[in-house]
Amino acid sequence: MKLPFQKKEPMNEVMKTIYKKDRFKRYCSLVIGILLISIAFNLFLLPNDIVFGGVSGFSIITKKLFGIDPSIVIFVGSFLLLIVSYFSLGKEKTKASILGSLLFPILVEITENISHFITFAENETLLAALFGGILYGLGAGLVFKAGFTTGGTDIINQIISKYAKVSMGKAMLMSDGLIVLGGVGVFGINKLMYAIIVVYLIGMLTDRVLLGISDSKLFYIIAEKEEEIKDYIIKELGHGATIFDAKGGFTNEKQKVLLCVVPTKEYFKLKGGIHEIDRTAFFTVMDAYEVFGGE
Image 1 (spheres, rainbow, N blue to C red):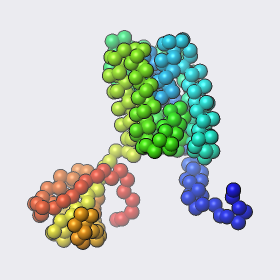
Image 2 (image 1 turned 45 degrees about the vertical axis):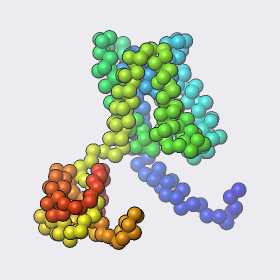
Image 3 (image 1 turned 90 degrees about the vertical axis):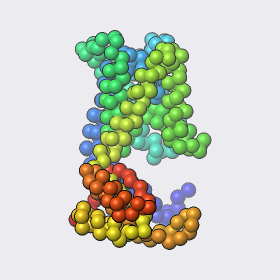
Image 4 (image 1 turned 135 degrees about the horizontal axis):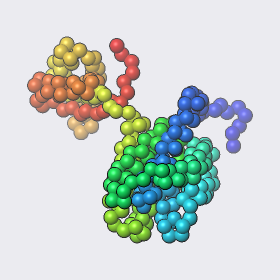
């Protein structure tokens, strides 16, 4: 129970501010994203019986076994899962899934006949899997980047993660894995290989849309000659660097850590320079998708 004198949590206010920004742009991204997903589903995945997980993958199975329209299965499944989400995850988390859950089956129905206008040879299943995965991943990335979801097994995954105390990745393997295995039982083992391609492409493209393509590399460097390496970065490469204090977790010894960000095209220059200056240096490199501030 919330008392009158209690203040709202600052984090809730931050989230509200974030969602209020670029609202029109976010809704456009949602519609375009789900449209791309629907086209990928009706044009590439459904005609080739590629069961890749999710409620939409389950609808491919039910169409084969019972002849039920996939849009009906997606709508009913998403609606029931929204109810489950409300009671299991709460009102706030359910909000992000409502629009996607309702819009997805509608656009699947609207684009249902697209395969009548654009057709592919029956032996081009591999191309269908490739382009279906790419198009679906791009659409999913746009939806997630706008702060929405398409509902469906996304809700199941959140519930499994919350109550089974497992990561979202493991929850996805559990829920979508069962649907993919169901597809194997209906369509055969060969379709499993295409489904794996689709799942991989969807995950990869979704990440690329969310994070973008990395054009910078982030270096964490631990070396005895950190001053020489710092001078090399600043004077030779022309980039900034930061040195901060740290302590070894195993040795408990104090040490310096050098942090810097360089363009990807200069990655080999810094890596080679570190080796030349201090061959005993330890460093790790990560993709830096966005870099703000500095000169």
